[in-house]
Length: 235
Image: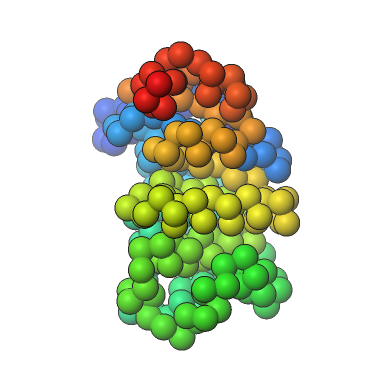
C-alpha cells in the first residue's frame, strides 16, 4: 500500500531524513520507533505533504504521492493523527468528528462511520455535545483518533498517541487500536516512544536514528535485538 524509497526531506535546504525506505502492506500494523529528534514526525509530515520531499519516491495505493498536493492526500485515504492531539477546543466532540469527515469517502459513509467510531470509543458518544477542550488528555486523544477515522481512511498514521497519558489510558488506546484494525481491516502506521508496546502490537517495525533507518524487521526480531533491548527497552 505504501512504499517509500530513498526519501530525503527536511526544512529549507537542510535534510532531516536521509535515504529513508519503508514499506507498509495493506492491513498491516507497522511501528516506527527511535529517540527524540530522529526524524519520525518529519517522516509523517512528508507523507502528509506539509514537508516537501527533496528526493526519493513515495507511492501510495498506486499513486505517486510526491506529485499529489497536500490537500488531496486525505482524499486518497491517508489520515494523519498528529502529535499533541490538536483537537478544536471550542468545538464539540461531534463537531470535531465532523471536521474529519470532509473527505469524499468520509462524507459518503458518515453515518455508518460515526456508529463504528462510537462503538470503538463509547466515551465520544457520551461526550458528543461537550467542548473538546474540556476533556481529559486521554479523551482528547480519542477525539483525534475518531476524527482521523471519520475520513474513512485506508491508512491511519498515528504520531505519538500515548504522549502525556497515564500508562493505563495509553494501554486502553492501544487496545482500541487493535480492535479497530481487526474490525475494519485498517492499515496503521505508528510512531511511538513506548517501544515495548509499539513492537508488541506491530507486524514489523523500523528503528529511525538521526534521520536514517538503522534497523528493520518483524516485531519479534526487533524486540530481541540487543541494540533495541539496551537502547529502548532498558534491558
